[in-house]
Amino acid sequence: MKVLDVQNLNVQYHTEKGNFDAVSALSLSIEEGKITGLVGRSGCGKSTAVRAIMGISAENAEVEYENLSLDGEIPVPGHNIAMIFQDSQNCLNPSVKIGKQIAETVKNRRKCTRKEADKRALELLDLVGIRNPALRMKQYPFELSGGMRQRVVIAIALACDPRLIVADEPTTALDGAVQAQILGLLRKVVRETKTALLLVSHDLGVIASLCSRVYVMEKGQVVESGTAEEIFYSPEQEYTKQLIKNAGKMHFRTEKEKVKKEILLRTEHLTKEYHTKEGVRDLSFELYKGETFALVGESGSGKTTLARVLSGILKSDSGMIDDRSKNRAQMVFQDPYGALNPCLTVGQALEEAIRKTVPDPWLRRQKAEDILRLSGLRETVRNRYPRELSGGERQRAGIARALVCDPELLICDEAFSSLDASTRDGLLELFGTLQREQALTCLFISHDMKAVARISGRMGVLFRGELVETGRTRSVCTDPWHPYTKQLLLSMPAPDPLRAGRKKGILFREKSTELPGREGGAHRGCPFAENCPYAMDCCREETPDSYVFGERTVKCFLYSEEHSGRRAEGYKMTSQI
Image 1 (cartoon, one colour):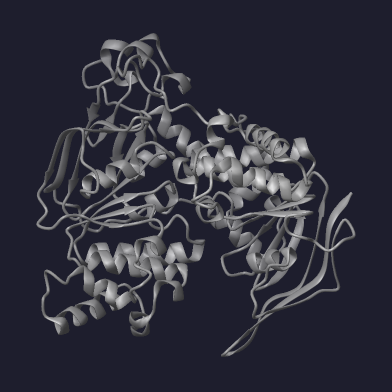
Image 2 (tube, one colour; image 1 turned 135 degrees about the vertical axis):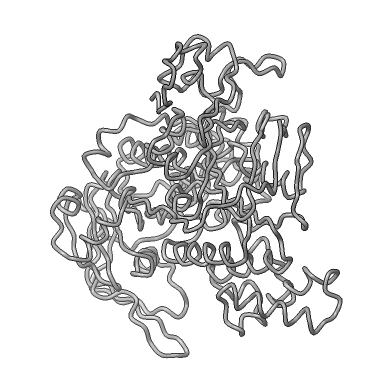
Protein backbone atom coordinates (compact mmCIF):
# COMPACT_ATOMS: atom_id res chain seq x y z
CA MET A 1 0.00 0.00 0.00
CA LYS A 2 1.38 3.39 -1.05
CA VAL A 3 1.73 5.81 1.90
CA LEU A 4 3.53 8.80 0.34
CA ASP A 5 3.14 9.92 -3.27
CA VAL A 6 5.18 12.81 -4.65
CA GLN A 7 4.91 13.89 -8.30
CA ASN A 8 6.97 16.62 -9.99
CA LEU A 9 8.17 18.43 -6.87
CA ASN A 10 10.06 21.67 -7.60
CA VAL A 11 11.84 23.89 -5.08
CA GLN A 12 13.33 27.24 -6.06
CA TYR A 13 15.26 29.56 -3.75
CA HIS A 14 15.00 33.34 -4.16
CA THR A 15 18.27 35.06 -3.19
CA GLU A 16 19.89 38.46 -3.64
CA LYS A 17 22.01 36.99 -6.44
CA GLY A 18 18.97 35.59 -8.25
CA ASN A 19 16.82 32.48 -8.28
CA PHE A 20 18.25 29.00 -7.79
CA ASP A 21 16.53 25.71 -8.67
CA ALA A 22 17.37 23.34 -5.79
CA VAL A 23 14.96 20.51 -6.71
CA SER A 24 13.48 19.85 -10.16
CA ALA A 25 10.68 17.45 -11.17
CA LEU A 26 11.27 15.06 -8.27
CA SER A 27 8.90 12.09 -8.09
CA LEU A 28 8.94 9.27 -5.55
CA SER A 29 6.65 6.97 -3.61
CA ILE A 30 6.98 5.06 -0.32
CA GLU A 31 5.16 1.88 0.67
CA GLU A 32 3.71 1.04 4.08
CA GLY A 33 6.13 -0.81 6.37
CA LYS A 34 9.03 -0.27 3.93
CA ILE A 35 12.30 1.65 4.19
CA THR A 36 13.10 3.81 1.18
CA GLY A 37 16.46 5.49 0.68
CA LEU A 38 17.25 8.90 -0.82
CA VAL A 39 20.98 9.11 -1.55
CA GLY A 40 23.39 11.48 -3.23
CA ARG A 41 26.42 13.68 -2.63
CA SER A 42 26.17 16.59 -0.24
CA GLY A 43 24.44 19.55 -1.88
CA CYS A 44 22.43 17.45 -4.33
CA GLY A 45 19.10 18.61 -2.82
CA LYS A 46 18.18 15.70 -0.52
CA SER A 47 17.46 17.76 2.60
CA THR A 48 15.74 20.48 0.55
CA ALA A 49 13.41 17.86 -0.94
CA VAL A 50 12.44 16.26 2.38
CA ARG A 51 11.88 19.66 4.03
CA ALA A 52 9.51 20.54 1.18
CA ILE A 53 7.70 17.24 1.72
CA MET A 54 7.50 18.00 5.46
CA GLY A 55 6.24 21.53 4.79
CA ILE A 56 9.12 23.18 6.65
CA SER A 57 11.01 24.84 3.80
CA ALA A 58 12.87 28.10 4.32
CA GLU A 59 11.02 31.39 3.86
CA ASN A 60 12.87 32.18 0.63
CA ALA A 61 11.91 28.81 -0.91
CA GLU A 62 9.11 28.50 -3.45
CA VAL A 63 7.61 24.99 -3.53
CA GLU A 64 5.47 23.65 -6.38
CA TYR A 65 4.22 20.12 -7.10
CA GLU A 66 1.74 18.18 -9.20
CA ASN A 67 0.87 15.92 -6.28
CA LEU A 68 2.08 15.67 -2.68
CA SER A 69 -0.06 13.41 -0.51
CA LEU A 70 0.28 11.14 2.52
CA ASP A 71 -2.59 8.63 2.59
CA GLY A 72 -4.45 11.06 0.34
CA GLU A 73 -3.92 13.99 2.72
CA ILE A 74 -1.41 16.83 2.96
CA PRO A 75 1.56 15.83 5.20
CA VAL A 76 1.29 17.54 8.62
CA PRO A 77 4.41 17.45 10.85
CA GLY A 78 3.60 15.97 14.26
CA HIS A 79 0.40 14.43 12.92
CA ASN A 80 0.90 11.95 10.08
CA ILE A 81 4.60 12.60 9.44
CA ALA A 82 7.57 12.99 11.80
CA MET A 83 11.24 13.77 11.28
CA ILE A 84 14.46 12.54 12.88
CA PHE A 85 17.23 15.11 12.43
CA GLN A 86 20.99 14.57 12.35
CA ASP A 87 21.85 16.52 15.52
CA SER A 88 19.91 15.08 18.47
CA GLN A 89 21.52 17.60 20.85
CA ASN A 90 19.75 20.51 19.14
CA CYS A 91 16.47 18.61 18.76
CA LEU A 92 15.95 18.24 22.51
CA ASN A 93 15.20 21.02 25.01
CA PRO A 94 18.22 21.07 27.36
CA SER A 95 16.15 22.46 30.27
CA VAL A 96 13.33 19.88 30.16
CA LYS A 97 13.55 16.29 31.37
CA ILE A 98 13.36 13.50 28.80
CA GLY A 99 10.08 12.06 30.10
CA LYS A 100 8.28 15.39 29.94
CA GLN A 101 9.43 16.04 26.37
CA ILE A 102 8.06 12.70 25.17
CA ALA A 103 4.88 12.92 27.26
CA GLU A 104 4.07 16.41 25.92
CA THR A 105 4.29 15.08 22.36
CA VAL A 106 1.98 12.18 23.28
CA LYS A 107 -0.54 14.54 24.90
CA ASN A 108 -0.59 16.86 21.89
CA ARG A 109 -1.19 13.93 19.55
CA ARG A 110 -3.62 11.80 21.57
CA LYS A 111 -5.34 14.41 23.77
CA CYS A 112 -4.93 12.10 26.79
CA THR A 113 -4.24 12.63 30.49
CA ARG A 114 -0.74 13.23 31.86
CA LYS A 115 -0.73 9.80 33.51
CA GLU A 116 -1.59 8.10 30.22
CA ALA A 117 1.04 10.17 28.42
CA ASP A 118 3.73 9.18 30.97
CA LYS A 119 2.80 5.52 30.56
CA ARG A 120 3.08 5.79 26.77
CA ALA A 121 6.44 7.60 27.13
CA LEU A 122 7.76 4.66 29.17
CA GLU A 123 6.55 2.23 26.50
CA LEU A 124 8.26 4.24 23.76
CA LEU A 125 11.58 4.41 25.63
CA ASP A 126 11.40 0.65 26.09
CA LEU A 127 10.58 0.19 22.39
CA VAL A 128 13.67 2.13 21.30
CA GLY A 129 15.90 0.06 23.60
CA ILE A 130 16.53 2.46 26.48
CA ARG A 131 17.55 0.42 29.52
CA ASN A 132 15.83 1.47 32.77
CA PRO A 133 13.36 3.89 31.09
CA ALA A 134 11.89 5.05 34.43
CA LEU A 135 15.30 6.46 35.39
CA ARG A 136 15.89 8.07 31.97
CA MET A 137 12.48 9.78 32.16
CA LYS A 138 13.84 11.86 35.06
CA GLN A 139 17.08 12.87 33.34
CA TYR A 140 18.03 15.82 31.14
CA PRO A 141 19.47 15.45 27.60
CA PHE A 142 23.00 16.38 28.70
CA GLU A 143 23.01 13.37 31.06
CA LEU A 144 22.67 10.94 28.14
CA SER A 145 25.22 9.74 25.58
CA GLY A 146 24.87 10.65 21.90
CA GLY A 147 23.43 7.25 21.04
CA MET A 148 20.86 7.44 23.84
CA ARG A 149 19.81 10.96 22.80
CA GLN A 150 19.24 9.73 19.27
CA ARG A 151 17.04 6.93 20.65
CA VAL A 152 15.03 9.55 22.55
CA VAL A 153 14.56 11.57 19.35
CA ILE A 154 13.27 8.42 17.65
CA ALA A 155 10.90 7.85 20.59
CA ILE A 156 9.55 11.42 20.21
CA ALA A 157 9.01 10.81 16.49
CA LEU A 158 7.06 7.62 17.30
CA ALA A 159 5.02 9.52 19.92
CA CYS A 160 3.30 11.29 17.02
CA ASP A 161 1.95 7.93 15.77
CA PRO A 162 3.09 8.93 12.27
CA ARG A 163 2.39 7.06 9.06
CA LEU A 164 5.79 8.18 7.74
CA ILE A 165 9.09 8.93 9.48
CA VAL A 166 11.72 10.96 7.63
CA ALA A 167 15.25 10.32 8.96
CA ASP A 168 17.73 12.92 7.65
CA GLU A 169 21.30 11.63 8.20
CA PRO A 170 20.27 10.11 11.59
CA THR A 171 23.60 8.38 12.29
CA THR A 172 26.23 10.70 10.79
CA ALA A 173 27.38 12.07 14.17
CA LEU A 174 27.45 8.63 15.86
CA ASP A 175 30.33 6.19 16.22
CA GLY A 176 30.31 2.91 14.27
CA ALA A 177 29.08 0.69 17.10
CA VAL A 178 26.23 3.02 18.10
CA GLN A 179 25.41 3.63 14.43
CA ALA A 180 24.93 -0.11 13.92
CA GLN A 181 22.59 -0.21 16.95
CA ILE A 182 20.52 2.76 15.70
CA LEU A 183 20.23 1.27 12.20
CA GLY A 184 19.07 -2.00 13.75
CA LEU A 185 16.61 -0.07 15.90
CA LEU A 186 15.12 1.72 12.87
CA ARG A 187 14.69 -1.63 11.14
CA LYS A 188 12.98 -3.02 14.26
CA VAL A 189 10.66 0.00 14.60
CA VAL A 190 9.49 -0.29 10.98
CA ARG A 191 8.95 -4.02 11.30
CA GLU A 192 6.92 -3.77 14.55
CA THR A 193 4.92 -0.59 13.89
CA LYS A 194 4.44 -0.90 10.09
CA THR A 195 5.48 2.76 9.82
CA ALA A 196 7.02 3.80 6.49
CA LEU A 197 10.54 5.27 6.67
CA LEU A 198 12.32 7.61 4.27
CA LEU A 199 16.04 7.43 5.02
CA VAL A 200 18.13 10.34 3.69
CA SER A 201 21.90 9.80 3.60
CA HIS A 202 25.09 10.36 1.64
CA ASP A 203 26.42 7.05 3.06
CA LEU A 204 25.68 4.16 0.70
CA GLY A 205 26.64 1.68 3.42
CA VAL A 206 23.76 2.97 5.58
CA ILE A 207 21.39 2.86 2.61
CA ALA A 208 22.40 -0.72 1.72
CA SER A 209 21.93 -1.83 5.33
CA LEU A 210 18.27 -0.78 5.56
CA CYS A 211 16.56 0.14 2.32
CA SER A 212 14.51 -2.04 0.00
CA ARG A 213 14.13 0.73 -2.59
CA VAL A 214 16.55 3.55 -3.43
CA TYR A 215 16.32 6.92 -5.21
CA VAL A 216 19.59 8.52 -6.36
CA MET A 217 19.77 12.33 -6.57
CA GLU A 218 22.15 14.56 -8.50
CA LYS A 219 21.83 18.34 -8.87
CA GLY A 220 18.26 18.41 -7.58
CA GLN A 221 16.95 15.60 -9.75
CA VAL A 222 16.34 11.88 -9.33
CA VAL A 223 18.68 10.34 -11.89
CA GLU A 224 18.05 6.69 -11.04
CA SER A 225 15.73 4.59 -8.90
CA GLY A 226 15.05 0.92 -8.27
CA THR A 227 15.36 -1.86 -5.72
CA ALA A 228 18.49 -1.86 -3.56
CA GLU A 229 19.82 -4.86 -5.51
CA GLU A 230 19.27 -3.10 -8.86
CA ILE A 231 21.00 0.09 -7.72
CA PHE A 232 24.00 -1.57 -6.05
CA TYR A 233 24.60 -4.50 -8.41
CA SER A 234 23.55 -3.15 -11.81
CA PRO A 235 23.48 0.67 -11.79
CA GLU A 236 22.81 2.35 -15.11
CA GLN A 237 23.97 5.93 -14.53
CA GLU A 238 27.68 6.80 -14.41
CA TYR A 239 26.99 9.05 -11.40
CA THR A 240 25.56 6.10 -9.43
CA LYS A 241 28.47 3.89 -10.47
CA GLN A 242 30.95 6.46 -9.14
CA LEU A 243 29.05 6.79 -5.85
CA ILE A 244 29.18 3.03 -5.32
CA LYS A 245 32.81 2.79 -6.42
CA ASN A 246 33.92 5.40 -3.90
CA ALA A 247 31.71 4.16 -1.06
CA GLY A 248 33.34 2.17 1.73
CA LYS A 249 36.91 2.86 0.61
CA MET A 250 39.57 3.90 3.09
CA HIS A 251 42.16 6.36 1.82
CA PHE A 252 45.25 6.25 4.00
CA ARG A 253 47.55 9.16 4.62
CA THR A 254 50.78 9.08 2.66
CA GLU A 255 53.73 10.31 4.72
CA LYS A 256 56.69 11.59 2.73
CA GLU A 257 58.78 12.11 5.83
CA LYS A 258 58.81 9.94 8.92
CA VAL A 259 57.99 11.66 12.19
CA LYS A 260 60.99 12.05 14.48
CA LYS A 261 60.67 10.08 17.71
CA GLU A 262 60.81 13.21 19.81
CA ILE A 263 58.20 12.93 22.55
CA LEU A 264 56.04 16.03 22.99
CA LEU A 265 53.58 14.57 25.49
CA ARG A 266 53.58 11.36 27.52
CA THR A 267 51.12 9.91 30.03
CA GLU A 268 51.73 7.15 32.56
CA HIS A 269 48.90 5.29 34.34
CA LEU A 270 46.56 8.25 33.82
CA THR A 271 43.19 7.78 35.55
CA LYS A 272 40.07 9.93 35.70
CA GLU A 273 36.79 8.32 36.74
CA TYR A 274 33.26 9.56 37.43
CA HIS A 275 30.64 8.21 39.80
CA THR A 276 29.05 6.47 36.79
CA LYS A 277 32.23 4.32 36.48
CA GLU A 278 33.03 5.98 33.14
CA GLY A 279 36.26 7.78 32.35
CA VAL A 280 39.81 6.58 31.63
CA ARG A 281 41.96 4.12 33.58
CA ASP A 282 45.66 3.38 33.73
CA LEU A 283 46.30 5.09 30.38
CA SER A 284 49.91 5.17 29.17
CA PHE A 285 50.90 6.46 25.72
CA GLU A 286 53.02 9.11 24.01
CA LEU A 287 52.60 11.72 21.29
CA TYR A 288 55.56 12.48 19.05
CA LYS A 289 56.32 15.99 17.86
CA GLY A 290 54.76 16.73 14.47
CA GLU A 291 52.54 13.66 14.26
CA THR A 292 48.78 13.20 14.13
CA PHE A 293 47.71 10.51 16.58
CA ALA A 294 44.09 9.39 16.26
CA LEU A 295 41.96 8.04 19.08
CA VAL A 296 38.86 5.97 18.30
CA GLY A 297 36.25 4.18 20.35
CA GLU A 298 32.50 4.05 20.79
CA SER A 299 30.44 6.59 22.73
CA GLY A 300 31.33 6.58 26.43
CA SER A 301 34.76 5.00 25.93
CA GLY A 302 36.57 7.96 27.52
CA LYS A 303 37.85 9.87 24.47
CA THR A 304 36.46 13.25 25.50
CA THR A 305 37.49 12.74 29.14
CA LEU A 306 41.07 12.20 28.02
CA ALA A 307 40.96 15.29 25.79
CA ARG A 308 39.72 17.44 28.67
CA VAL A 309 42.36 16.12 31.06
CA LEU A 310 45.18 16.76 28.56
CA SER A 311 43.91 20.28 27.83
CA GLY A 312 43.67 21.13 31.54
CA ILE A 313 39.86 21.43 31.63
CA LEU A 314 39.70 18.44 34.02
CA LYS A 315 42.16 17.26 36.66
CA SER A 316 43.19 13.60 36.69
CA ASP A 317 42.59 11.40 39.74
CA SER A 318 46.03 9.81 39.48
CA GLY A 319 48.87 9.19 37.06
CA MET A 320 51.37 11.48 35.35
CA ILE A 321 51.29 13.81 32.33
CA ASP A 322 54.67 14.87 30.94
CA ASP A 323 53.85 17.83 28.65
CA ARG A 324 56.97 19.20 26.94
CA SER A 325 55.17 21.71 24.71
CA LYS A 326 55.86 25.41 25.25
CA ASN A 327 52.16 26.35 25.20
CA ARG A 328 49.14 24.55 26.67
CA ALA A 329 47.12 22.46 24.28
CA GLN A 330 44.27 24.07 22.34
CA MET A 331 41.02 22.27 21.54
CA VAL A 332 38.78 22.27 18.48
CA PHE A 333 35.34 21.16 19.66
CA GLN A 334 32.60 19.20 17.90
CA ASP A 335 30.05 22.02 18.15
CA PRO A 336 31.69 25.19 16.74
CA TYR A 337 28.60 27.28 17.47
CA GLY A 338 28.79 26.43 21.17
CA ALA A 339 32.57 26.96 21.26
CA LEU A 340 32.44 30.52 19.87
CA ASN A 341 31.09 33.48 21.82
CA PRO A 342 27.83 34.47 20.05
CA CYS A 343 28.24 38.08 21.25
CA LEU A 344 31.61 38.54 19.51
CA THR A 345 32.41 38.69 15.83
CA VAL A 346 34.88 36.11 14.55
CA GLY A 347 37.65 38.71 14.48
CA GLN A 348 36.90 39.84 18.04
CA ALA A 349 36.91 36.23 19.27
CA LEU A 350 40.36 35.63 17.77
CA GLU A 351 41.78 38.88 19.13
CA GLU A 352 40.35 38.21 22.59
CA ALA A 353 42.18 34.86 22.71
CA ILE A 354 45.60 36.59 22.37
CA ARG A 355 44.90 39.80 24.30
CA LYS A 356 47.41 38.92 27.04
CA THR A 357 50.17 37.54 24.82
CA VAL A 358 49.91 40.23 22.11
CA PRO A 359 49.21 43.58 23.84
CA ASP A 360 49.42 45.73 20.69
CA PRO A 361 45.90 46.06 19.10
CA TRP A 362 47.24 46.44 15.55
CA LEU A 363 49.41 43.31 15.84
CA ARG A 364 46.45 41.39 17.31
CA ARG A 365 44.27 42.35 14.35
CA GLN A 366 46.99 41.51 11.84
CA LYS A 367 47.57 38.10 13.40
CA ALA A 368 43.85 37.33 13.48
CA GLU A 369 43.53 38.21 9.78
CA ASP A 370 46.54 36.05 8.88
CA ILE A 371 45.11 33.05 10.75
CA LEU A 372 41.69 33.47 9.10
CA ARG A 373 43.31 33.41 5.64
CA LEU A 374 45.33 30.36 6.67
CA SER A 375 42.09 28.65 7.72
CA GLY A 376 40.54 29.25 4.31
CA LEU A 377 38.09 31.99 5.34
CA ARG A 378 37.33 35.17 3.42
CA GLU A 379 38.31 38.52 4.92
CA THR A 380 34.63 39.51 5.24
CA VAL A 381 34.08 36.68 7.77
CA ARG A 382 36.10 38.68 10.28
CA ASN A 383 33.20 41.08 10.93
CA ARG A 384 30.45 38.44 11.07
CA TYR A 385 28.94 36.72 14.09
CA PRO A 386 28.91 32.91 14.45
CA ARG A 387 25.16 32.76 13.70
CA GLU A 388 25.84 34.33 10.29
CA LEU A 389 28.20 31.54 9.22
CA SER A 390 27.56 28.11 7.72
CA GLY A 391 28.55 24.98 9.65
CA GLY A 392 31.77 24.61 7.67
CA GLU A 393 32.69 28.29 8.13
CA ARG A 394 32.02 28.07 11.88
CA GLN A 395 34.31 25.05 12.18
CA ARG A 396 37.04 26.83 10.23
CA ALA A 397 36.62 29.75 12.64
CA GLY A 398 36.95 27.28 15.52
CA ILE A 399 40.20 25.97 14.04
CA ALA A 400 41.44 29.56 13.60
CA ARG A 401 40.51 30.33 17.23
CA ALA A 402 42.75 27.46 18.34
CA LEU A 403 45.62 28.24 15.94
CA VAL A 404 45.83 31.92 16.82
CA CYS A 405 47.31 30.94 20.21
CA ASP A 406 50.30 29.26 18.49
CA PRO A 407 49.80 25.86 20.16
CA GLU A 408 52.24 23.00 19.67
CA LEU A 409 49.51 20.50 20.51
CA LEU A 410 46.05 20.64 18.94
CA ILE A 411 43.27 18.41 20.28
CA CYS A 412 40.35 17.85 17.91
CA ASP A 413 37.39 16.29 19.71
CA GLU A 414 34.99 14.98 17.04
CA ALA A 415 35.67 18.26 15.27
CA PHE A 416 34.15 17.29 11.91
CA SER A 417 31.64 14.55 12.77
CA SER A 418 28.48 16.71 12.62
CA LEU A 419 29.30 18.19 9.19
CA ASP A 420 28.06 16.98 5.82
CA ALA A 421 30.35 14.84 3.67
CA SER A 422 31.68 17.46 1.25
CA THR A 423 32.31 20.04 4.00
CA ARG A 424 34.02 17.37 6.10
CA ASP A 425 36.26 16.30 3.22
CA GLY A 426 37.27 19.90 2.56
CA LEU A 427 38.10 20.51 6.22
CA LEU A 428 40.09 17.28 6.48
CA GLU A 429 42.15 18.40 3.48
CA LEU A 430 42.68 21.83 5.07
CA PHE A 431 43.53 20.32 8.43
CA GLY A 432 46.12 17.97 6.96
CA THR A 433 47.78 20.87 5.15
CA LEU A 434 47.81 23.05 8.26
CA GLN A 435 49.21 20.24 10.39
CA ARG A 436 52.12 19.69 7.99
CA GLU A 437 52.88 23.37 7.29
CA GLN A 438 52.64 24.47 10.94
CA ALA A 439 54.45 21.36 12.27
CA LEU A 440 51.59 20.81 14.69
CA THR A 441 51.23 17.79 16.91
CA CYS A 442 47.62 16.69 16.87
CA LEU A 443 45.44 14.36 18.92
CA PHE A 444 42.58 13.61 16.53
CA ILE A 445 39.55 12.12 18.30
CA SER A 446 36.90 10.68 16.04
CA HIS A 447 34.46 7.81 15.57
CA ASP A 448 34.85 8.06 11.78
CA MET A 449 37.35 5.38 10.76
CA LYS A 450 37.61 6.81 7.23
CA ALA A 451 38.57 10.23 8.60
CA VAL A 452 41.08 8.62 10.95
CA ALA A 453 42.66 6.69 8.08
CA ARG A 454 42.96 9.83 5.98
CA ILE A 455 44.43 12.15 8.63
CA SER A 456 46.58 10.11 11.04
CA GLY A 457 49.83 8.19 10.96
CA ARG A 458 49.29 6.34 14.27
CA MET A 459 46.13 5.49 16.16
CA GLY A 460 44.88 4.09 19.45
CA VAL A 461 41.65 2.26 20.28
CA LEU A 462 39.81 2.95 23.55
CA PHE A 463 37.31 0.60 25.15
CA ARG A 464 35.64 1.57 28.43
CA GLY A 465 38.48 3.84 29.40
CA GLU A 466 41.32 1.46 28.53
CA LEU A 467 43.71 1.67 25.57
CA VAL A 468 43.38 -1.81 24.04
CA GLU A 469 45.44 -1.36 20.85
CA THR A 470 47.86 1.13 19.27
CA GLY A 471 49.89 1.04 16.07
CA ARG A 472 50.31 2.48 12.59
CA THR A 473 46.90 3.53 11.28
CA ARG A 474 47.15 1.56 8.05
CA SER A 475 48.16 -1.61 9.90
CA VAL A 476 45.47 -1.33 12.59
CA CYS A 477 42.69 -0.63 10.06
CA THR A 478 43.66 -3.38 7.61
CA ASP A 479 44.85 -6.00 10.12
CA PRO A 480 43.29 -5.50 13.59
CA TRP A 481 44.77 -7.49 16.46
CA HIS A 482 42.35 -6.81 19.29
CA PRO A 483 38.82 -8.30 19.02
CA TYR A 484 37.25 -4.95 19.86
CA THR A 485 39.13 -3.17 17.05
CA LYS A 486 37.87 -5.83 14.67
CA GLN A 487 34.31 -5.26 15.92
CA LEU A 488 34.62 -1.52 15.31
CA LEU A 489 35.76 -2.08 11.73
CA LEU A 490 33.04 -4.67 11.07
CA SER A 491 30.39 -2.27 12.39
CA MET A 492 31.04 0.03 9.43
CA PRO A 493 28.12 -0.59 7.03
CA ALA A 494 29.24 -1.98 3.66
CA PRO A 495 27.66 -0.69 0.42
CA ASP A 496 26.38 -4.18 -0.35
CA PRO A 497 22.75 -5.20 0.45
CA LEU A 498 23.52 -8.94 0.63
CA ARG A 499 26.49 -8.52 2.97
CA ALA A 500 24.43 -6.16 5.12
CA GLY A 501 21.63 -8.73 5.28
CA ARG A 502 24.02 -11.44 6.50
CA LYS A 503 25.28 -9.36 9.42
CA LYS A 504 24.46 -10.66 12.87
CA GLY A 505 21.65 -8.94 14.73
CA ILE A 506 22.41 -5.94 16.88
CA LEU A 507 21.46 -5.82 20.55
CA PHE A 508 18.98 -2.98 20.82
CA ARG A 509 19.53 -2.18 24.50
CA GLU A 510 22.47 -0.03 25.41
CA LYS A 511 25.18 -1.77 27.39
CA SER A 512 25.65 -1.14 31.07
CA THR A 513 28.58 1.03 32.04
CA GLU A 514 29.35 -1.43 34.84
CA LEU A 515 32.51 -3.38 34.13
CA PRO A 516 32.62 -7.17 34.57
CA GLY A 517 34.10 -8.24 37.84
CA ARG A 518 33.67 -4.82 39.45
CA GLU A 519 32.83 -5.22 43.10
CA GLY A 520 33.09 -2.37 45.57
CA GLY A 521 34.93 -0.28 42.99
CA ALA A 522 37.57 -2.95 42.24
CA HIS A 523 38.11 -3.89 38.61
CA ARG A 524 38.83 -7.52 37.75
CA GLY A 525 39.15 -9.08 34.33
CA CYS A 526 39.25 -7.73 30.78
CA PRO A 527 36.49 -5.14 30.18
CA PHE A 528 35.73 -6.65 26.77
CA ALA A 529 35.43 -10.23 28.01
CA GLU A 530 31.62 -10.23 28.15
CA ASN A 531 31.43 -9.42 24.40
CA CYS A 532 34.53 -11.21 23.13
CA PRO A 533 34.17 -14.39 21.03
CA TYR A 534 37.78 -15.33 21.91
CA ALA A 535 37.44 -14.92 25.70
CA MET A 536 39.21 -17.46 27.93
CA ASP A 537 38.67 -18.16 31.62
CA CYS A 538 41.59 -15.91 32.54
CA CYS A 539 39.95 -12.98 30.72
CA ARG A 540 37.19 -12.85 33.33
CA GLU A 541 39.48 -13.15 36.34
CA GLU A 542 42.71 -11.33 35.42
CA THR A 543 43.50 -7.98 33.84
CA PRO A 544 45.66 -8.28 30.70
CA ASP A 545 48.91 -6.35 30.38
CA SER A 546 49.90 -4.36 27.32
CA TYR A 547 52.06 -6.54 25.05
CA VAL A 548 54.43 -4.72 22.67
CA PHE A 549 55.50 -6.08 19.27
CA GLY A 550 57.42 -3.47 17.30
CA GLU A 551 55.07 -0.52 16.69
CA ARG A 552 51.99 -2.52 17.69
CA THR A 553 50.77 -2.63 21.30
CA VAL A 554 47.78 -4.78 22.25
CA LYS A 555 46.09 -5.43 25.58
CA CYS A 556 44.84 -9.00 25.18
CA PHE A 557 45.75 -12.42 26.62
CA LEU A 558 45.81 -13.89 23.10
CA TYR A 559 49.27 -12.32 22.79
CA SER A 560 50.60 -13.59 26.12
CA GLU A 561 52.79 -16.71 26.11
CA GLU A 562 51.69 -17.43 29.67
CA HIS A 563 48.03 -17.77 28.66
CA SER A 564 48.12 -18.78 24.99
CA GLY A 565 51.23 -20.99 24.83
CA ARG A 566 54.94 -20.54 24.18
CA ARG A 567 56.08 -19.67 20.69
CA ALA A 568 59.11 -20.83 18.75
CA GLU A 569 62.24 -18.69 18.81
CA GLY A 570 62.16 -16.03 16.09
CA TYR A 571 58.36 -16.23 15.80
CA LYS A 572 56.98 -13.00 14.32
CA MET A 573 53.73 -12.04 16.00
CA THR A 574 50.68 -11.64 13.79
CA SER A 575 47.00 -11.12 14.48
CA GLN A 576 45.54 -13.95 16.57
CA ILE A 577 41.91 -13.25 15.61
